[in-house]
Length: 173
Image (cartoon, rainbow, N blue to C red; front, top):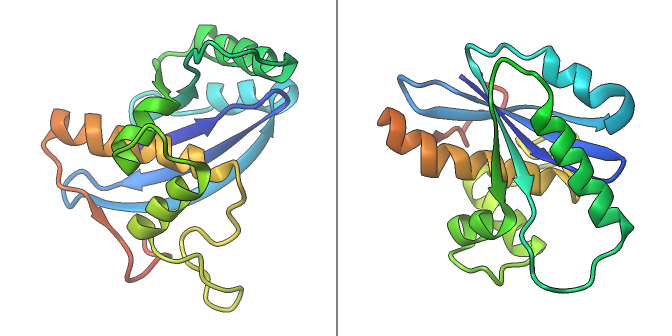
């Protein structure tokens, strides 16, 4: 099974692909992508295999604070992605839900999220010895966190799967 976690943005979205073996629960980061919303993202989503893939997108909560145009642009893209006629549902998950699940606190910051993801998937590593998260930048962490939350919180309970993060050999599929 393949899980795609998406961190949407006003002009580009970041995607992390997780492969999970349902029998063993082994989970690996398989790929990461940065897609232009207008040109590439819709085509990427249309090309997925709806019988084996799940797509989880980070959604927004209202904090009753003023927001700028970038926030509204991101919200428009989330709506566009969700309303496209895909043969599968795009699962929306709020950042608050992810923070609470991953860090046990809604006050968690981006550095707490990335630290928790490194704890699950291993150190980033170096160019000569890359880890699963080698090359990750700021927007890949929320994409990984939303996919991980879906696997741990929703998929594990629904399919009765124990999650096994493959820390020994990051290149193993």
